[in-house]
Amino acid sequence: MLGKIKNLLSVLQRFLKTNEINLWVDQWNIPLSSDWEKCIDDALERCTKLLVVLSKASVNSDEFRAELRQALDGGKSIIPVLYKECKTPRRLTLIQNVDFTQATLKDMSKINQLLSILRDDMEYDWSLF
Image (cartoon, rainbow, N blue to C red; front, side, top):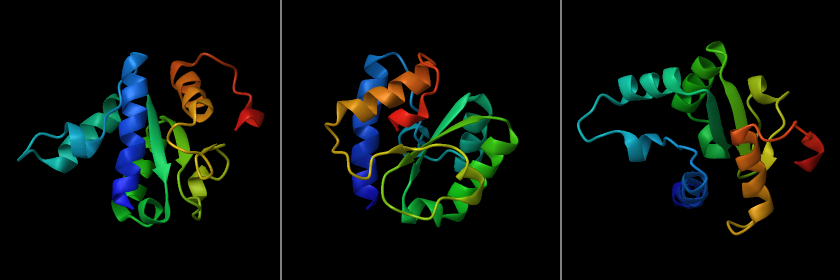
């Protein structure tokens, strides 16, 4: 499962980078031998938006829930990406997600929706999602 999520993140990173949007991923952006907790805390402090990939594995992770709680408490905008059907964390139930459960990694409509949200290009017409 983690490999599939990494594939999704790789595709997203490529398209986001092409559109000059930075994507920070802990496993890619934390240097070897660094303090992971401090690096993640610093990244959460600096970010303005947090894209969270929802799957059974992620929502059941204590670390995921702690990072989500920190971001929400810090007033960050959260962009949930539903990757695999799962129980949505309570604090995300009122935030519309971008549903990738039926999409392929080549589904440009979903990727373009994410780009629009991340760029603030559109009024949120949640019916698109």
